[in-house]
Length: 572
Image 1: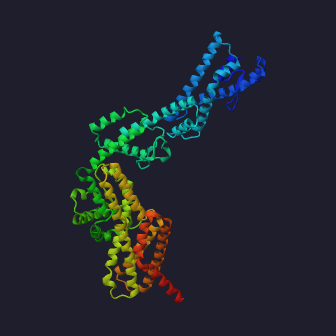
Image 2: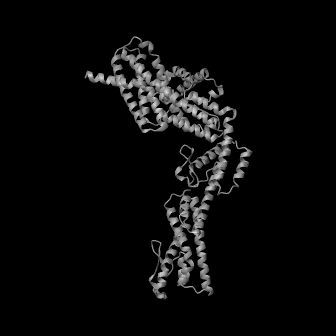
Image 3: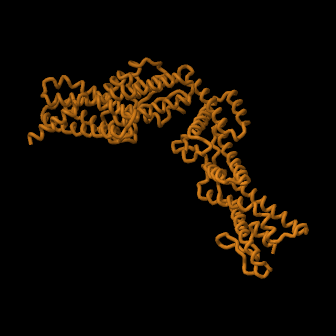
């Protein structure tokens, strides 16, 4: 009977102790025939719980279906704990067989009770782990049980399990930080490749031992190593530095990350500032994508209006792109004081998979010098720049068209002149707001940050913030505002188009119709801006207030709209 009891405690069912469907052991009816008194039967009940826990942990440790680096080391650690307990049972069995100890049920109970709490905690841990997706966050679960235990032996056991998981994280970090390789066959690391083949952070997988800022530093270092490795630009100094880092104990993960980050930040900063690469690229983007040099695109618009006004068939698209590129090069060489090699890095194209006129499909492509194109001016970044570029290009185009109407409008009636002035007022001040109040202000902020740092990562952060703020303050991510801008531009085009065709009949009815549409759009624009202003706070209020001030200085438009509304009501 004693051997049956020891066998059950090791997690195996037998003749006297059977395993139910729910995984729990119970005494079979034959236990009454082995001469146990009632008190011994009561003592056996907690032993049944121990045996059930051991069987449960054994089953977990022997599971071969778990595809996870972290689960694998956890299983090994738990298997080790179970093995130590089973070895204790073996010692008890040997003592009984050798006759050196006359242990009964009570004696066995007293010897193994110190293991009871540990086995119970391990079972709870495994239950919690089974509810989680296997990844590096399993470390946080282990840390939680370690910190909320209070029993020194159990704390030490959980610390051992935590350490083996930390070793896995350490190997993943070293592989990424030193070689730019993701050691992550089961998608458990907090850095992964997205659908665009860019390395990104999954914030939900960052373990507690790393802060978000450290995770961002890890991403930066790995991306830098990938970029340098692809360009075969890792120096002997870099490899020597990597060798030193590999010798740092895995417990000092934070130190490893910070050393790697500082090394790569200095290395890349020296690369991008060498031969003034960074300033050249920034100036090129500012002058073209953000239209600081307005003369370039005034000339470009004049040269390409006939091309971009129409639709394109697939055959026409190729010819049109070639013609656009030739005209862009002419504009750049005429008005931009840059070396020819730098100018030729810029090209203009038409998006083939977008419907509409060329003005809505045109985009610039800038082949920046390595490693800026890999780490700073990524495809997503350039898409944002192109959205700003298309908005500025269309605003510039409308301004030129409205300015060119003065010869035709000199002798025309007041409503026509008033509509032209109102359209010019709104679109010019919208352009000035974007160029002066947004781009110039944010550029000066970024310049100050760059002057104060000698660190590539800090520059990248400053540039990212520069672009995010510009996108926010030009309302790129507010569809209602973009639709309103687009409708205003189309309204102005319709107005200019009427005179381009040298038509006079139906002029006043068209102007009345356009005036009504203009009033509707302005009411919508002020409604949207006032709504955003009321919902904003602090520095986010300033640009909205500035745009409202520019558009409606001294209540120029709102009072005019109200006066027209009153006249209309009076006529009715």
